[in-house]
Amino acid sequence: MVVGVCHLDVLIEGVGSLKGKRQVMKSLIERVKQRFNVSISEVGDHDIWQRAQIGISVVGSDQETLDSVLSKLLSFIEETNLVQILKSNVEFVHFNLDFW
Image (tube, rainbow, N blue to C red):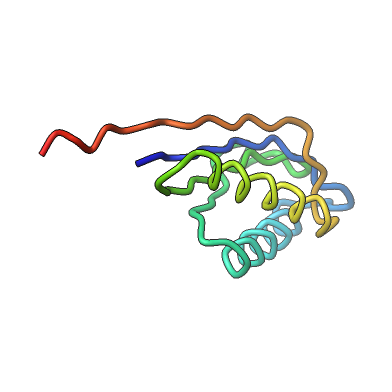
């Protein structure tokens, strides 16, 4: 079993309030959930209008597949034009299931 975890630091241009930020983030999160079978949440910078930290996780049987999913997901986020990805970090954790 492999878990892929992605952390994003994003810029949200054109918002002037936390309410505006929440609307953009809600839209982005819903679009990602509809398109990809992943868990996604805003995990930081909650009180900064034009910035957000996003956490994404996905579970599968091999790293190659998960890497492909996360790459497509990052491209999708950029293509929405809702946010600009400033930094991204992807890590994979492998679990040995032979302990039974």
